[in-house]
View 1 (cartoon, rainbow, N blue to C red):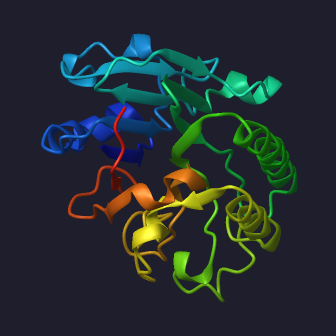
View 2: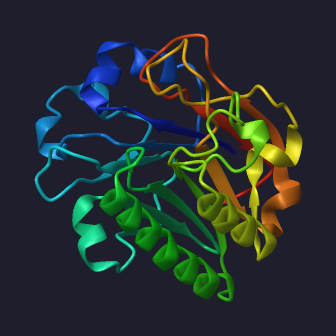
View 3: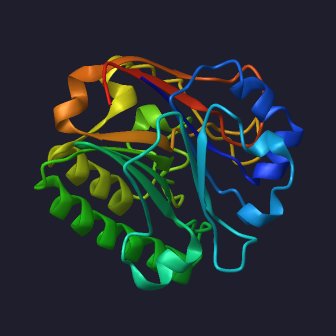
Length: 253
């Protein structure tokens, strides 16, 4: 089973840059896209609805910011939107497809600009709620695979020039500690199950040329940790400031 995760910086802009042309050659079972910055009703071209997939969208209440989408080759048993986080759900930050004992989620975390105290407070609040939610669902008889733009680089290996960037939002001690706790309590970073590369980045704030970050993650239930077969970050073309993350799993729906 192949899952591609990609943060688009605007789905229509990514399409203009060739994202769907590239995607048509990838034979993915799931495509999880974050930061679509549009409403489903804005997407009039058939390119946004590949015939081999069931497409589901959850956009921001104003249809212009944030938003997530998931393309599923196999018809899901159910689609869930939101996480029950009040105002955050209005921002189009999470969509989930359920199959038997497996749930595949698509997540967009809030952004906080460096030094923006209120934005950072809001981001921390989101992760506090998310941590409690993931701890709760861990006890259910389900396996979770959550793809997304988590906006946290976990370790120094996930941040280029980590010493110089140690005070930036996305690499703050409290954010990294939150990820530590998540990965110590029932979840795993799928990419790190098969790769120890210290130069595998998926995001460049000013596109290529600036320091790279690995903040686009596929987080899995620990029961799935040995199912990861291959992981890669595609940097051959630039569809946004983020690169697609491609992970193959030995999982049958």
